Amino acid sequence: MAIWLSEMKEKFIFNFIEKDRWKWLFQGLGNTLIITSVAVLMGIVIGVVIAIIRSTFDKNKETLKKRGGIGYYILSFVNFLCNIYLTVIRGTPVVVQLLIMYFIIFASSDNGTMVAMIAFGVNSGAYVAEIFRSGIMAIDHGQFEAGRSMGFNYVQTMIYIITPQMFKVVLPTLCNEFIVLLKETSVAGYVGIMDLTKAGDLIRGRTFDAFMPLIAVALIYLAIVSFFTMLVGRLERRLRSSER
Image 1 (cartoon, rainbow, N blue to C red):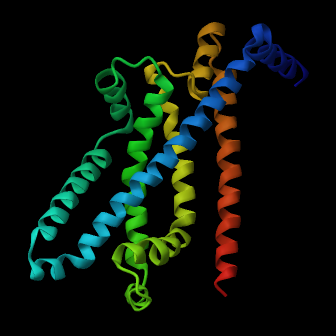
Image 2 (cartoon, one colour):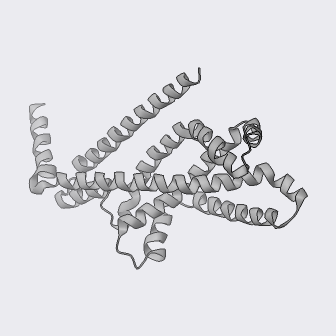
Image 3 (cartoon, rainbow, N blue to C red):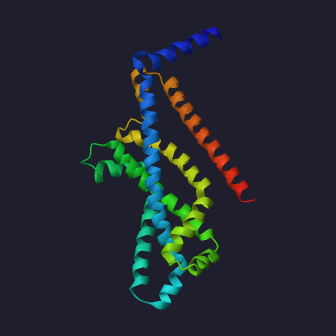
């Protein structure tokens, strides 16, 4: 046992302490959290817009179709584009989307972190849109009528009445999307970005020891995910208690 502990200590020092390789892990962790945070915010913006368009079309297509006019065709076309976006993004791997963003769409850019933010934000937006749409569709139709009785038009009703309630309904699911996205960013190293996984791989490449750096990366991910999972659990309990 003592010999094993001594060997582990030597490996730890060799992998992380020598040449300050532990700094790579902190740098990678920082980039991972930044990419994830910005991507989630971008995904929320995209998701809200697409969810409102799709839910508006689903709720009002019969009425608009009966009325006729150009409004129905404009909304139908925009809804069609949203469906194409959702189909493409959810039907292709995120790593392929990242590679397309980096090597094709933003090939002239040398800011890999920014490209990763956009790629993961666009990817997250497709899933967040469906989360928000399900939240909007879960709101009782009487809430729309209440908004109309207060003198709000459809857009004002969505902004001031439906959207706040929708956020409360989907907030735990949205937090879980953040956790999923945090783990998905581990593929950012495919385009040379120094994320947490890439940092562990760089240490492995310098020391030729796979066990210590990769286990360290796994433990860091586990600790972060466990922390956010605990926060989501507390949030869900608080939301349930506030409904009583």
